[in-house]
Amino acid sequence: MSSRWKRFVLPVVAAGMFWAASSTCIQAGELTKLKAGIIPVPEHTKLIIARDKGLFAKEGLEVELIEFDNSADGMTALRAGKTDAGSVGVTAPLVHISKGAENIRIIGGLGGEGSAVVVRVDQAEKIGDLKGLKGLKVGTVRLSSSDAIVRAELAKAGIDWKTDLKFFELKSPAAVVEAVKAGQIDAGVVWAPFDIKAEEAGLKVLVRTGKLSPAHPCCRIAVLAEDLAKRPEVWTAYLKALLRAERYIDENRQDTVDTVTKALKLDPKIVESVIYSGNTEFSSDPNVKGIVLFWDAMKASAFIESKADIRAYIDVAPFKAALDSLIAAEPNDAYWKTRAEQFKVRD
Image (cartoon, rainbow, N blue to C red; front, side, top):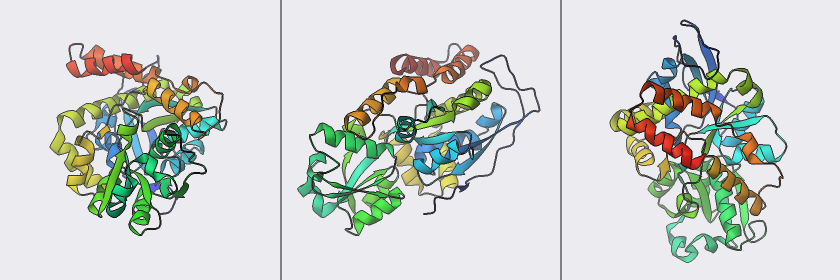
């Protein structure tokens, strides 16, 4: 697939006022236009729901979603100014930060877990578990969260992923699945819904990353530090819309499946399985503790080298302001209370 970025959906045009995290407010009738990256998979459902259900509009935002094949392309576009927000696997911004990118800020999340290692059925018993990958050919997608998780867990198991097996970085999870099917590689590391598509194609899930590293963060929302400093109220509004979308997904199962199916042109059974099977979570929380653990695991496995304090690149203020605003408007609402408790635990 081409790495060229392209338009994914038409923009939502909206007017109105939205609550501001700072003293700046957008007056009725003004629009704040944003371009947000999206990987067209159900894990990014919140972006689609926020668009199609008018939740970005409710916060006074006009959002255009830009499709990318993978997180590496999404991060490149963000840093080049082609998008305002990157919706990318946590590995991508962390690798850029490890290489000296000082102006990346993680402000929220789209999902967690949701990835798997897949193999051919006739090889599954022989391979057995992650340790069984030693000496084999493994396909992955560059800068994906699942890639980093698998390499970190191999290192923990005493396997040097640089010398004890051969990694092949492919363009997309679809390409990984095809390579496993064709016998070009022995195993593949993919994210949802490609784990399901792999099973439909006759492959088998060897292990899920949620089993390897429970509650690990996956796709994060990344912005540029200078943009965040210039207009914090915009990013608070953006996160409010995603929090509302998170709740919508929780409370409106069938309509969520229908909406995402239409947008992504996927089998509704696949969409429903990814969103509601329990293998993927959809918390909007930045998850500072999870990112720190991920960062430390990447360093321990020699995936990256850095002396940076990753906490300096995570800004929870916009998310907290968004959640505080929702709680202030509905102080007795049980859903927002659960999000506040999660924030206390994770951040």
